[in-house]
Length: 250
Image (cartoon, rainbow, N blue to C red; front, top):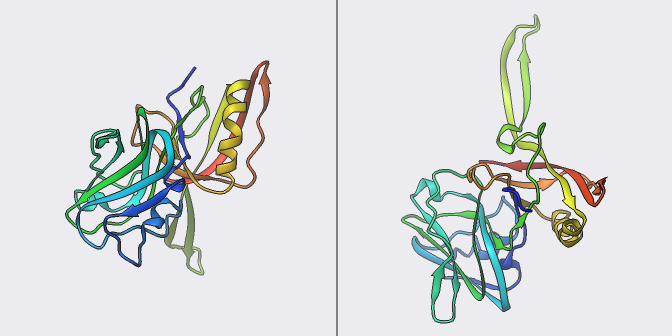
């Protein structure tokens, strides 16, 4: 059984040799796959920029995700290609972002040694995070009582008042979003096959979460809070766990 919820954490860019056709020496291509949003990859020129990944052996991918860019401000496009032995082939049609919403797209699984990210932009752009590999579908989606990431705004408010108590204004500090990933009724076999790999990644790095593939603009670039809870048996042959996350949706 597979739901519409997807987790994207495997990143084949971490597994091979990565070279950009153009790069600003102060913003190297390594910045695009270190999972950090405060540093960026930036080319030295505008136009079409290729980021080539060469793996030691063929590996499969069926998702592509990106976040932290300004392509939307310059009419830029981005897509992933794989090499089929004779040339590069698109995994999906090029995406033209209209904002900085985290994007996770899925496509028919392809297996290759050579992969290429193609970004076309009329201006020099910057991008913080790109990831692609095998997506992790959840067996069941989110349940009642769950807060979609875009509605889980985490905001700190600081009020100013006069000596007499009059309201003088307010400072608003955005701290992203806060919600949970609810993995419920997961079969024992699914949990044993997928939980160890996901936790090994999530304990160290952020990841992408798309609650519903039918709502592609409601993804979140997120990370876990504190220690990741351990799953437990909730029904015979099935396990559940609720994972608190913080993240960014714009």
